[in-house]
Length: 344
Ligand SMILES: NC(=O)N[C@@H](CC(=O)O)C(=O)O
Ligand SMILES: [Zn+2]
Ligand SMILES: [Zn+2]
Image: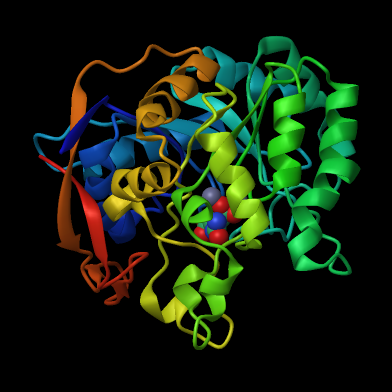
């Protein structure tokens, strides 16, 4: 059995830089025509000039013969000027601006401390139609980690949309029924990405027989009720929900540590993981729209030409991949069997 899809895109991806970039990029470029590339480097990508330089490094790291279009993003700070938004709109390179609440996740320390400080940039974005991508978690350490997304909706996102009703927003990597319901109830200017791992796993995966750092990401996996709500949203056919892997590579030493980094690496088998999730819901026929149509339609970009084929075929995920810093990269599902395989 095989399924053929219009070539998909990844609307939320971490490619890192340098040797790490060179290690992970072929996995994504093999499956996806384009990806929205996150700006949380050190230092973060806060200007169009920095985004253009990063785009050139990504293209230079692409193995000969592969094609891939990186869609860059700017990292919003308390001080992003409206002029930088105008430059981004005029560029062919930058397609969105990313809100990291300061302290919410990996490399977010330069992020936004108080969203009110971003009013000039947000007004320009609302006026010019530049999408705001949101890591939606409350950062008050008193808020329970499993409640951070829900609290963010009420304390930040709902008031933000009330102040800027035209603002185009992608609520990234949603993890709760609350977020899925919120997005579904908003106007067509609000959409969401959903990762494969949040469709496949609930929070038990982090603690199955012992602590499993490779299942630790942010926002953290939630309880089964939420996973089921995400699966319903992803397979609903609603164009507000689309594919964004949040594939977030970290060297093994950074993950398997007393204070391990947040992020799951899924680029090695992204489509296979999504196909597994959609099949579990009896909705393989909805995968193409989620993976290949809803994203470009929201971003106002053309859908891709070309196709990819997935075959019902058992294969074992490698235990590790080569990475940077003389270390290895542990993929999600390392050493486990998958039952779908993308054909070359
Ligand atoms: N998702 C993660 O757990 N980590 C991401 C950052 C992010 O997307 O929040 C990373 O850059 O490692
Ligand atoms: Zn995030
Ligand atoms: Zn991410």
